[in-house]
Image (cartoon, rainbow over all chains, first blue to last red; front, top):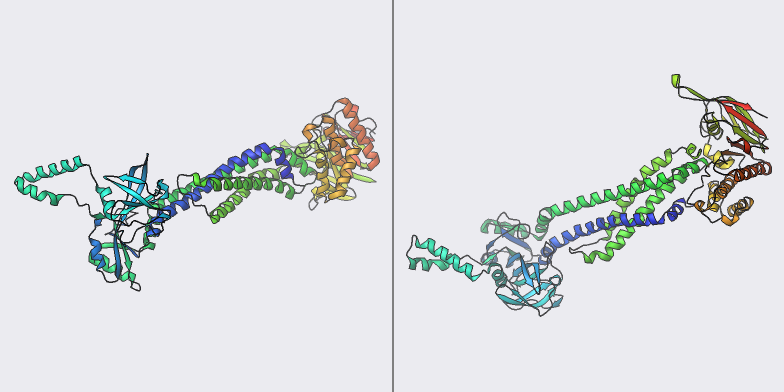
Length: 396
Length: 228
């Protein structure tokens, strides 16, 4: 006779409400799992999609994603001269907030050498890759643009020629690919009034020690350099020693070099580590809260039945029957709540603003932890049930 | 045939200045078919004697022989499977019925049968038989909360009878019933004692309910007096 089920049938309203309540907590735990995986997925998406043999960045910087790195663009020519380097491409990456359609959107821009350079989109889902030096863009679908849309960025308007799904920024924002000069222009483009003011300020400073014509002559050369990049992506000649080439670049050009695996580790141990720990802490806390709630519910359920348990003992029910009653209720509650959470998250994950990557192994581990938590949660109730004296059944 | 024999049973709570002698040198013998009443005011030791008789509370001294088996002597009841005796040989009827609230009337009766491994058609037939015997067959699928006090007590009696116990212990079985219903329950217990040859010990404080009992014991300050 399944006493647990009979008891839950009588209290089905409360049981269902508890399953939903605890189930929502499990939904958040599973969502946290998805966020954790999503965080790593997004954080590494550009690195994986770009995947050069070497990332060359500013000396002692962990750039271009984990830390800012800036270098003059022309250095990629020097890199091409390094023995063992087959291709070296300039790469720029930054985040902007601009008007796209009728919405202000936050997105990242990658500028790369569109003519056979590295760093561009690897897979175009709709349309084509950038084929012209200017005014074309490839965007991630999440930006909300369509093929052929014209998007104004700074002084110019760019036509969407392709849509991609693969790369999103480490912040989970959509990525827009532009040619390197276009990306530099969008990044460094300034207001005409600001340019005039800066020129006047410079001119005033120079005329303190130079004649006005001499100052005027010097001015163009003192304008800020916009040919700045964040990294140079290197493809090595097949068969060369990667470490040797990297050492050569570091010694000769005074840059830092990372393989894609090292760049991935930089992100995992740097920028992503804090968020990962935070999510782990939240998951642990939520699981603990779930276990405490189940424990209290089971304890309450047990305490309500304590006289019945005394009667059962008095009429000869072995302890196993009592243990089964309490444990089964705890297990049914845990299982029901977990299934509710699992169904809910698998049907709603796409509605979350951040990417949720749900993996079966994460679901399984969470279930095992929840199941063990359910067993743990029943201990308090079990302890009360087992210490109940049959004598309690006697008397009024 | 003798079902229960108690010799020199004493129960002392506490020690030294706090010592309370709840039962003092109690002896009694109950045979199958006997209907025994235990009377006494509050604090006289009725419940303590019932707890010792039902093997819930271990006496300080004394011998208990139940159904030919010595349950308690000098060494206490070490090694005795009390729960087995409860489920196989004893039936309990309580003052407040104590039906399991989440089981229907027939499931309440089925429960002790399931504890001794009786299942399937044989168990169901026994439940039907008891429900009819108690005249509550039409209430078989009702939860206890939907039954009247009298009906609940009948289900409780049917549950106590389920495994044909050698001894039925009833603790104030009529306390929560009106006089008419209380008398009916007592008549039923008499009938059960005679027909099943079970020994029935009833603890009560209501002398109106013990008409026709074979033995009537009065407990006063832990001492037992036999009226018959």
